[in-house]
Image 1 (cartoon, one colour):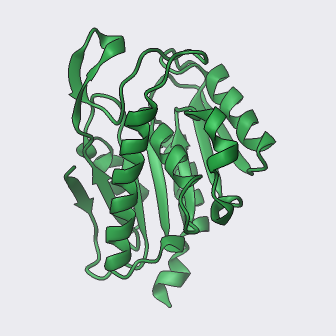
Image 2 (cartoon, one colour; image 1 turned 90 degrees about the vertical axis):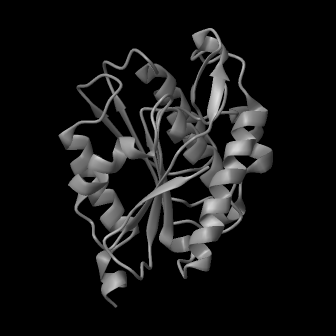
Length: 221
């Protein structure tokens, strides 16, 4: 898994690992990271491997895991999700070798990438700065009670969704939010008049959230 790096500083002390959606690649959110205008943050935008997607008649595309459907009761690719978690944790470990501690690293993701970001952050055994789950849902929810990390029980969670999303319906995201809250997580929830996409108001809210969990003052110090 190759990663596209978008960074304006040579000695970063904080970073965001941002996962794209199904069929896209790491370059997909490069314009968004530029719009955020947060030069103190080191953005890592990995490319998912190519996989045959069952829901799309076996068509091969970049994907973090296989998809069988998008309803609450659809079969889920537990092996694929866990494999992506392992890959993302390897990127976290790499950031650690660059001198960026885990508590200064956030995970972010859109759609399928958001599902992997949530799954990984809630199970990671070192405290993280936060997780942004955009137009997505909580995967493998039945395994969370046994697998969740004590270190990230208080992790800041940003969830955002379009009220007109016909790919992952907002009801699915709201159900995930409730499951997270029932598990004791604090969720900052946002919804926007959009489909399965990102808009300017959401980007502004993401910027404020990132400044809160990864403040520039720490970088300046």
